[in-house]
Every structure is written in structure tokens, then in C-alpha cells.
Amino acid sequence: MAERDMITCHCLDTTAGRPAANMRVSLTLLQPFGPSASFTAVTNTDGRVTRWNRPEGPSIAELFENMKEHEGAAMTWALKFDTGNYFGTDKTFWPEVEVKFFVKPTEAHYHVPLLLRGEDSATQKDVTGDLILLRFPKAKHPHSFNNSADHLDNLNEEESDIFSRHQG
Image: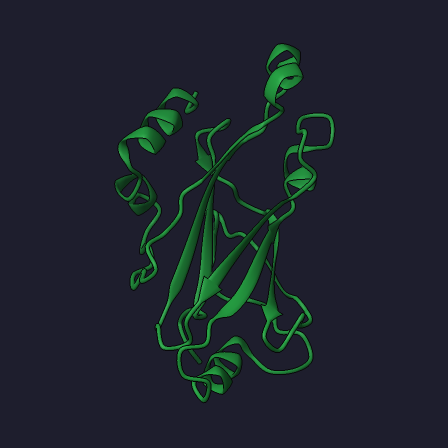
């Protein structure tokens, strides 16, 4: 069994200044064979999903393998983060955050990181709702973070500044 699936994610809660642990996340193949039944998971204590619960049907690896027959074709996937349940409906404007992305089946691994902040300030909410930052990975993202300190090492300057301001 693989150590991680071919698509992983990582979510940081900048309000609390820590990984977003215990957030429900779903992963759905939208194109070309989909929409598929959703793979589901809950982020671990480090805010990561490295293995998905498999619905009935093909695994993620099997879907990637099936696509290799279609040279140059891309797959469209959607990650859905249950932010309403994670923050609480009275502390967030967004019930969920959905990120759609393209994947080429020839790549070995895709990692989708997400920074988010629940906002309970009425003044801030009146203008913008919650601040949600998505860090777009390069088309090839061959690594996964290996330990809980790595997520800070892999933030760019703006993300690091936002994370630091909200640590406590």
C-alpha cells in the first residue's frame, strides 16, 4: 500500500496559527470519467490528508493509470474543505471552500496547500467575509511535507507573515 495517495492536501488555520486539524475534506474527479463518487478524509493533527477513504469504484491510482492511455489529457479534480463545520457557522462566512484543479496523469504526486482564516469581526465581515488564501502549486509538485515544522518552511514571505500575525 502506498504511503500517500497521488493527490494530497494541507490546510493551515491562520486564525489559530496552527494546522487545521479534524477538518472534513472531499476529493472528486470531475472530468473525464466523472463526476466520480467522492473520496473523503479528515485532516490529521498536522492539517494534512495523505490517504483518502475510497468509495466504491476505482482507486485514485487506478484512475491515474486509466488516464495514461489518453496521452496529453488532463483530469479535473475538486477538493472541498468543510470550513463551516470546522470554524462553526457563527464564525465563518463560507460554509465550504472548493478548489478545482487540473492534473496530468503522468505526474507522480500533486499537493494542494490551503491557508484560511475564520473571521468573527463584524466590521471585517461587512466588507469582505473571511480571508481565504490559496497557494497555487506549480504544475509539478513532486514533494510532500514530511513533518509538522515543514509547513512553515514551505510558505512564501506573505504566507509566513500572515501565519505569524495570527499565531497567538
